[in-house]
Length: 328
Image 1 (cartoon, rainbow, N blue to C red):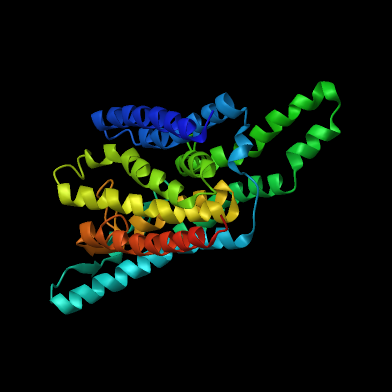
Image 2: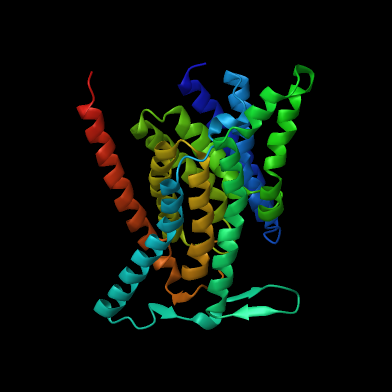
């Protein structure tokens, strides 16, 4: 089947299914686990399409470790974005004289480490930093196992009648991921679909990959703008969706760099951790380390759009120049 038709089938299945789960969540937003299920829809559809159209196994998405540099960039990118937003916010506050535009509020941070013990203030950052690193270790384990070819080596070492055991072994490698990230590892689920399937299909044509994933990934987030936190703010909703669309470009570039879903999943997970903790949660309305006009300086608001937009613009210009310089 032509790549174009595969793409249409993937989008036509993923968006309605994810919107259906999103509508279920909107009916009762207390069921946050539904959002995790929604995030796994792209992976499930990708696995189905890859097998139906090309008989590709799940590992075709790219599960091998492909070097430290993509992983490190994935971990640093959200922190760079946060720094950019903070500098811009404090700069705007100083120029405009709008006191309270951004407020440092460490007292707003808290996390329950047990039923009886709650951490507050800067200690929360230390706790979350440690948890952040520990939660990435299961993904590193799988990536290293595929890098060293453990599943394939096991398949080759087993007698033919027992060669099928490499399939449960592959599933066993992911067991720590499900223990640490829950039954529905949403960030990994999204990246297997959007980057491990959709971008992979157009990896040799990055401008096309960007043109497809930008509107589609934004459309995937449509249920969020109808939530109780974001409903009734059309300008904020538009900026939110544009920020998501712009972020699709650096995500696509990261996948093309390593041809592995892991750096993209690391970036996605790191973003979902540090952006709300530091700049506030635009999904649930929870405060962050910095308060004030969160709807403007958040990483998924106007200032985040500026940061992602500049990165996306630079990447698109590079890809255009590479296309014009390529031999006919």
